[in-house]
Image 1: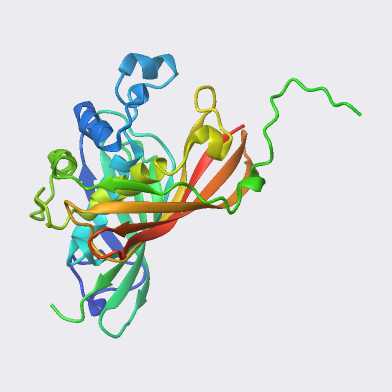
Image 2: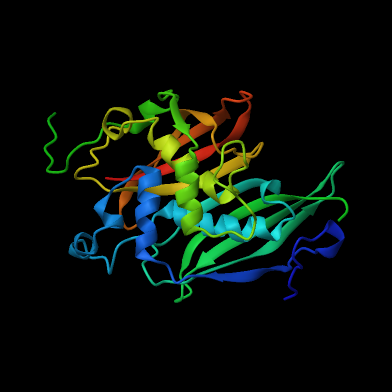
Length: 147
Length: 152
């Protein structure tokens, strides 16, 4: 599968091209504290390993919006400007735990030629070390007419 | 005829469709964005200072925490969070302009759909349609839909 170049123009892309995969991590349990403070969510499932294990989980669960943040950063860094982001459609499939790595990737699904800018529509995914899908969905972004 | 059952009965949540939820506010503070950038280092030069553009990776946090302020699990979703299990379902967001550090956003939402699904367990999907506006210009920053899965 052909890999799409970074910060592309419409003419650099074709449907079916893969977005360059990015690996994040390992995830750090101490990152869950500032995220819990930002979200005003002190659910012990995210912070207390014993509490999580008593509920049958291997460890504390990384907050879903933090998983999303990695996928967003992956996609928006591929675009020319971060806020060239147009839309996202995300489904949560599995949990992330401390020390996991997150692999983000995608594929170009459609290309659209516009007046002031062009659009790229992609399928996106995020997986862990076991190749288990964490997030699956779609995202669209604007592409400038020239560099 | 009286039907006896040992299962707790949940009223049909379809009756919730169309219910507007309370308007909520969130201040995109320098502290929150600073804490976030401490976790998510970014090759772009985002700074946690007022009137600077916030990273788009911060947007899902604003949507999630903003929406959680628009409803009460028990009174709005008829769901007891203490002994029930709930999780995020699908999320769709359109971005209309960047989010800025220091601005206050207003989150308004309505219950747009409710449906039951059965997999290994039976659950209700409660979908919210939402708008997030900025106080600087009153314009929409994000609009979209977020669903919550409530296990029965």
